Length: 253
Ligand SMILES: NC(=O)c1ccc[n+]([C@@H]2O[C@H](COP(=O)([O-])OP(=O)(O)OC[C@H]3O[C@@H](n4cnc5c(N)ncnc54)[C@H](OP(=O)(O)O)[C@@H]3O)[C@@H](O)[C@H]2O)c1
Image (cartoon, rainbow, N blue to C red; front, side, top):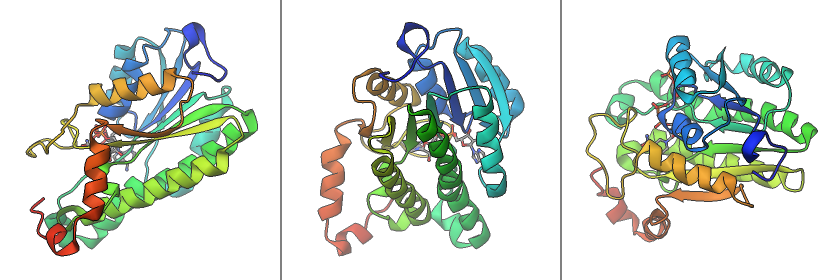
């Protein structure tokens, strides 16, 4: 990573928002962090985060974090930065629910949006302020192919991801020239806990593959920008945008 870094060129302090996220932990595993790296795992399940921290073989600490508790986010970020500069923030909180369930549960749909969009805005603006002041760092935002065009079968999730994707792009522009990079990651269908029980979509990937692609970008000379995983999704997404709406409406999933 081309900013201030720890041993072996990696980050010294890392914050994972969504401390049990398979993709988030996949990124940390793929970075092969030095044992001296301090990893702050922020989330709801203290036990699972502690176990994940042990597995990473780093100095791990857990912080309580609820993505929907917006009024706690500034304090959480202050706590994370209280111990020193944070070189890498990964924003990985998210939930997925079928549209047929959300259609009958408007409150649940609103909470999904809070988790997948609003909570990222309040945490990442607070983190961006601290990173701008320290003059270095990278923020990884986990968007999705679902952000590209809302599908009938998944439109609340897609709307939240569209908001997050737009936020990530705007944040990148606002931080340009400050020494802080934003990497916007758009995975396709990732086979894992979030998608358990669902039939994998074409060009499916895994948390480990997303982790490897993100780690490779972070290790390079331009850690920011846009990253499709797999890369072959980019032309597919371009085609998605062009599909006439009557056809798009008929997509079964
Ligand atoms: N899986 C996919 O197919 C896919 C594809 C594209 C993008 N993404 C995005 O990638 C990100 C990570 O997904 P993943 O595959 O790693 O899923 P995951 O393993 O299910 O991780 C989701 C994380 O979000 C946390 N979370 C959920 N609600 C929360 C809340 N209210 N407060 C704090 N944390 C909360 C979960 O914590 P708990 O352990 O407490 O539940 C977990 O740490 C998400 O933003 C997801 O939308 C996923």
